[in-house]
Amino acid sequence: MKDLVISGKRVKTELLIALACFVCAVLINVICIIAYHSQWHEIFTQIGFTVFIAIAIYVLLVILRLLVLACRKIFSKK
Image (cartoon, rainbow, N blue to C red; front, side, top):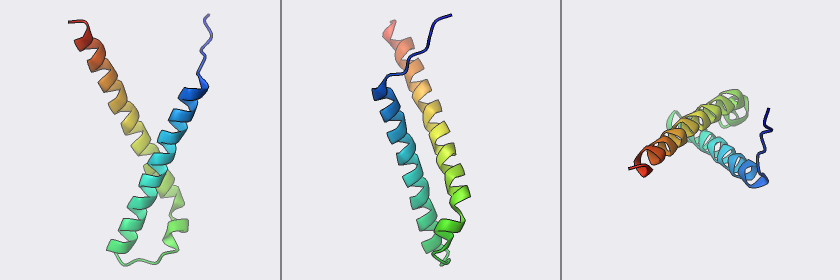
């Protein structure tokens, strides 16, 4: 069986993408707090939902990246 090796550059890239997804989820939380005139402590109390939203954004980005990769492979053969 062949070993799977993930380069350090790829790990750093994925961590940066995950961090960007978390920051985006926090910004969504802040926008919702402002829009609904809620209390600011919800930034900390709703961290579970924020992490869930960040994971959902990351999964959507992975699916989008896989679709782009598949389209590139299909159209590069022609």
